[in-house]
Length: 588
Image (tube, rainbow, N blue to C red; front, side):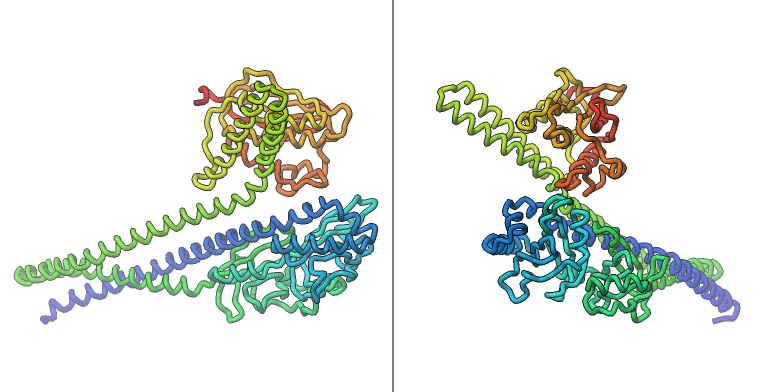
């Protein structure tokens, strides 16, 4: 090749190589940041998903002490020391443990000695053992309930002990204990990429998908903390040595082998606990580096094509024709390759969106566990009312009062339709989210609520003032707005139960484009200590309450773009005001 033609070719190659290098460096920097951001989102998403699974597994066991507290023969087994009663209670606890999957259930009397247990007939029987040194027993006797994670001093297996006091604070009979173990849940978590740790408020790793990390500490413990742990035998003979992982404050960590990790965290339903999920960085960065090299190569190729075009203009006409033909062939081949790459990327993007929608649907289905806990009593009440109506209809039928039989049957049919509407609402949530919102006749909602809780109000001897007919329509969902009113009215009836002058009122006030529904009572009012958290889950002023109802009310009203708040009661007790939008058109 003549020297005068070699120099432009060399310059063109150098320019293409330079552009390719710059493109590779820029793509590498951008793709590295993008890979880290994607990993951070993945770690947070997995942590949140695992936390939801933990919460759904724990919720049924939290209800067990409440259920056991209703057993009428608990007092006989705890206070009287009746051996036969305690052995009968052994059988009941064993049956309940088998049906719920609880590892062990047991009763401790007021002195701290176990009198009955679901494992009474096994070699690991807790009967007769002294647990008065255990913090979960001490706190339950003092505060009424406690949750405490520890290693069993008989079984040697760690678990969360859920306790509830039996009897009044000034005269307790003892404590009921439910132990929950999470080994099965940890095995499920091992199927997710990365490692998962549950860390308590003191920095102790309670659970880990990396078995060597259990009962290690992420920060030093004080001498007092170690003494308290040893005195309660909380972690058995575990030495509580430092973790092999290096936790950093920038959302990253280092594995025992020095590999860099991205950290995602989630606050857990147990006070002080947090879930930490870590994923390795190396694989994502390796993929990003490969893609950056491909981008640099493409940039260099495109730059070479442009340089070739410039070089073609500098050559003779004959050479230009041949080079043009070769260049067009190269461009066509590369265009086909790029078209295939674009089609493949579009297919990958479509699969990603489909997977994301499936994950969102799975999340909605997982939420049904917590929704069912709030709707169960709304279904039980119509069922109980249907039974009462059916028994009354049979009595009227025997007396020949056919008109009353027909009336009772009509009411039962209406309640059956209401149950169907509630279950349909749950199915609608599973398929499409939160259901349809539109104009709803407030008179129909009030009438349905009155039908659902009428018998309970009359049985409690409560004077309940209802608003007059002729109320406007509002923007809401009928079944869920009825659920809001029933929850608030039930709470009010419970608050005034036993009072000679028990009184509850439901009022409706129009204020411009909104409607305010206020439920007030003349009960003792809301404890100031919990007033600011009254709508939070598991916050309740009743000894036997779960603290779920008002949280459900707030969630439903928020879905209507409304508000619910505590307001001064005109009757002197507590009052809750629900504000929703006024409908501009009649309901269909």
